[in-house]
Picture 1 (cartoon, rainbow, N blue to C red):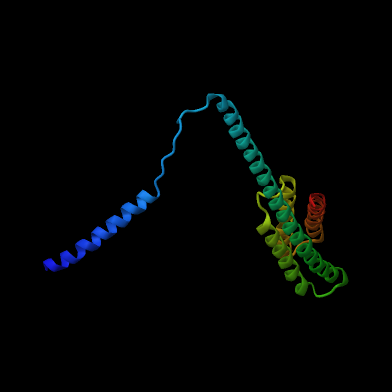
Picture 2: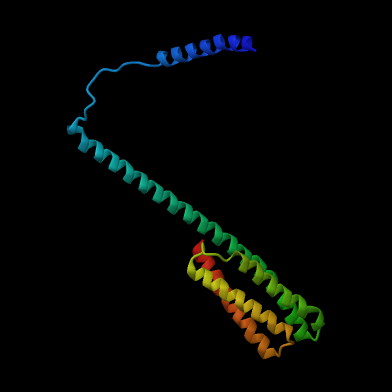
Length: 185
């Protein structure tokens, strides 16, 4: 058992010697005076201050650009959804109106019109967020509310005046929201 220690001792001594040589090989002595040149301190501080200010401005500009890009993307997405889904809803509601006016199959068209209004409202509502400009967000919310209310009116077998009032509100809020979409582009 002692022989195992005897073998390990030369190995450990060799590793220690290599470690000492490695540390000694990386050491160098530098001459000079470790004092601060007081005349350069104001220039150094001004340089650091300018660098920090420039960094802050650059970061602020980049953040503003990032926010603007996010807003632009959110506007485009929600406005495209409003445009396409509400156009489909209008077409489906017009089929219902045509059936009512021509004595057609009202029962077959009222539920699809109701579903189209609610579906479009749901799709637009899902894309409304705080990234959008407040006036656009408010206009989209008004349209969503009007569309859902019109869907509810259709669910109750409305009179012509009830239906027209609800659809007029849908049309007005849709026009307002689409105009704001055009302005935001």
